[in-house]
Length: 123
Image: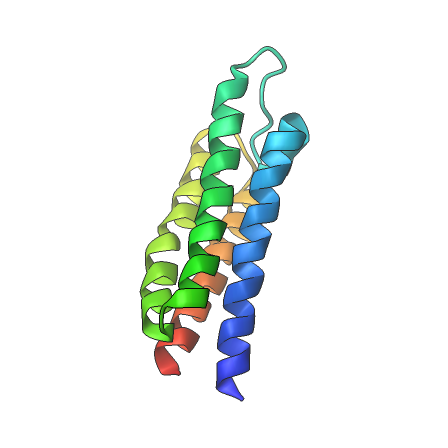
């Protein structure tokens, strides 16, 4: 029973971050607001595109590992990738975002990613 939960959560997280990446590429202003730090209307769109590509690529790497590596390799990936939402928590707090967005979105995501890592190490 643990194996489908561990892999299911990992697949869900990889697809979710790919969706977020696509959202930053397609509707960057809305995606930035959802991130917790709205983008300036006249700001440099390149940074929003970079975030979109980074997030999409993170998901692709996760799916590739899920397809071609064992659970422990994916667990190490999830452990390392948890740094991204932890850093995002700090970014939101340092750049005028709300504590609700920082902790309710980004820190909570880091916790879920760490749970995914733990589950993958357990199988």
